[in-house]
Image 1 (cartoon, rainbow, N blue to C red):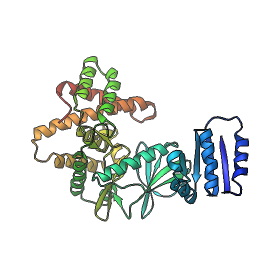
Image 2 (image 1 turned 30 degrees about the vertical axis):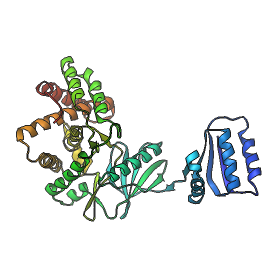
Image 3 (image 1 turned 60 degrees about the horizontal axis):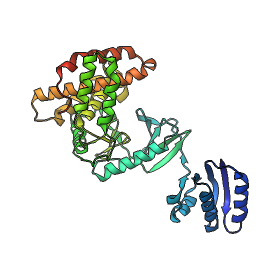
Image 4 (image 1 turned 180 degrees about the vertical axis):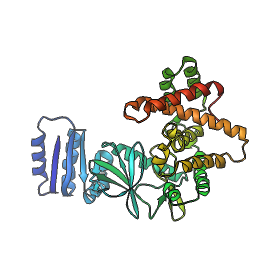
Length: 378
């Protein structure tokens, strides 16, 4: 049940307001939503009305408070006792430049100072608040992270707003002629900072647990011996506490006045860095295993530049290692990538161009290479 609160609720009308609300509620005992979009002010007398409603019905919550009303609830401790939320500023992204798009959302530049990530799920408020907390956690730990400062409503969807003054993504810089070699070095510097950040057990979701799920899903799609070995290889990857970004590519690295900042932090997790490299390989090369322009279209640069950025990433991250070891790591990364891709494509094949061909490619790769591999970690 939704009840609209309007005008002012103070000592002069609190009793009358409470009586009207109770009359509307009657015998109803489900979730009670008090819509405060029309509420201009609430005094201590009005707060006592809200408190009695909450005591009578534990599922009472207040939504769409303006800033002044929300501050009253916050200062008096009500936001700690019950669910109270602000009204969200409405924003239009019509005609705005699309900076990037992922599985969860689309990132727009709304003006030279601001970008907004609009989530595709209309019930995304929990995701948005979770990403904000993850970004704050990463920032406190020394990761160069852009932290969202506001939540807005975009049509029927919600978005996170970031202040990034004249910032450009690495993708944009490359498209404008930026030095791929130098940008890859800078990308690897951030990547090493992320991976050298060690977390406490359970502090972030386990990538290993998720990845074992990929292998379990694809196992029946492969010859029995290959499927069994692949699952065993995934289970043997050590459960480490390294921080992982999870969606690390040139559209999620922004450069602002010479400073590099990460966005899209909702995929933060923990685990062995090999999983990060599998995702990076997928973004630059793996997704183009059949449609050769797939990664280029996604990242907004040429196919050769995608491949070069991947090669430079490997070169600078594993600088000083023997080439034989690096080649071995690349095979591990490819195996994890194509196992994950096989799972994803198998679940979405009907809606995808070249889906059957990608499935066949991934199966052939795994059938040929899994027997040659002894481990999937370095």
